[in-house]
Image (cartoon, rainbow, N blue to C red; front, side, top):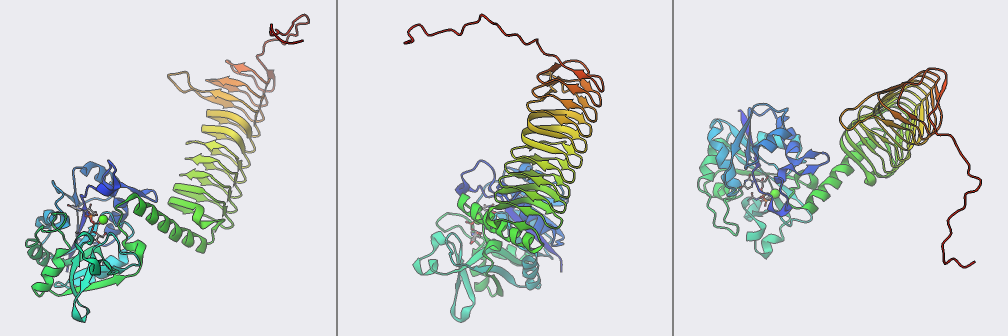
Length: 458
Ligand code: UD1
Ligand code: CA
């Protein structure tokens, strides 16, 4: 039996109070929608249909890597049953259908596969959850003998029903023909005046369609995101689970509750990550890497033995083995450091390659530069790489010494072994092995007197 997936993603998400479509809210570096689509794509369904509102482009960009998605517009958001009805005409009537909610991001593929398996060409299958706090969810009302009678939305529920802790997760699966038959009969006589997919359950019971439930107790897996509070709670749940898995694989985290990975990472042995570190995109750590407190590392690679001291930001960089970074360093995209380089406090590097053992220890900006081996870049050195219109390169040869507070006006080339005197403004090349400096002569005025305030009491 083939099956197709319908993802509901057209809701306005009024409770989020955002201008973005709700399903585009970010969870751990990916939109809610991308999380759901990843789960859907893993299922080997014959088709995936996405019901969207007037934001098709935004959603499509989020899942560019997925081909063959059927995009269905729901012009007016009249409810979840109405949303499914928009997609059903394009579904093969011979097929089973699995409905996913675009705002329930952490659903596991294995749970979905077992729902689909239970349809068996005839059953309506509903995924329910036993949760400690059911507020906000539809409640599963069971009749005598424990079989499901109906699902009631919170706003339509009476006090007894509100006390039920078995909730509707929204995930539902049934043969396409059964769904169309049931959905055509759903009305909108409820508090919101919407067509509720959940009403398919009581209609199925009435018409003798077998209704099966599968139940989970994993709250995060079935949590929907309707409010900023729910989004934050789910993010913490996700991060906790992820931190647990990383530590299980040997990563040392000083405090797993103060660690965030918004993407993916690889790491070697004996890596230690201190508190409040944020890893984004894809991050690769070699062996013996230490990352100090309050650092952000985005799409970067840190080699064996690298130490990143607190409050550093590393973005799109490749850091060779045994380098020492920070505290308060900023490596921007295109930074490549060879082994044993040292980038200290308040130093910013951009599109710069630095050779083995070179140092910029304090207060420097080095952009669009090729720096050789064992170069010393003094405190306060700046490459003037931008003339207001174009960027220019600075080339610094091996063993050069750039005196403190020098400005290297690019394009400029400093030869191997050159020394630049402190406080120089270089507008021309500096030859290898020589001292080059540009500095006004120091003077002392013997007869100078410091101005005095007129009314100063002597
Ligand atoms: C829904 C369920 C509720 C369940 C909860 C689980 C209904 C009526 N209620 O409530 O029983 O406990 O999910 O998370 O189904 N959508 C559309 N078009 C619409 C309306 C909604 O595509 O016209 C989409 C939304 O984008 C969202 C999903 O359907 O992804 C669910 O809609 P939402 O309004 O969030 O329903 P809940 O109130 O959370
Ligand atoms: Ca919801």
